[in-house]
Image (cartoon, rainbow, N blue to C red):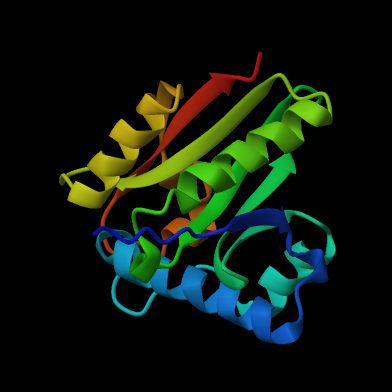
Length: 181
């Protein structure tokens, strides 16, 4: 006899999350970037502090995922220009891998952009220039599978010269874009 378990995923603005839930979402984000950005920023990298993350929540720029009423991931989405939106800070609980959290968060970001007149979604991957990082290669393949097209790469030190001083390896911003129509 087989037993099936169903998980209910809820995707919504993080604005109504309580402090405990916000801290959990932040911890998922902190761990995700600390583990996946070692070749870019080095050990113990903190992508964003809790106060700044909370400000994005208050501005309604963070969409979050709950699985069985537990926070399991989030995404930052915002308008870049009149017709182009972007997302960043995508994170999902590594212990819940395989539940479609990342895909659901990207879908929600795209739907928000479309509902507010967005025609395109753009994103960047910060990638070490002189080495192949398996996680970054998987991200590239995944985004392409979701319909994002690589448009160009730029030297990160030219895009964000002050922040680039903290890199442990020279990096490029790889830009991707997707039509939302």
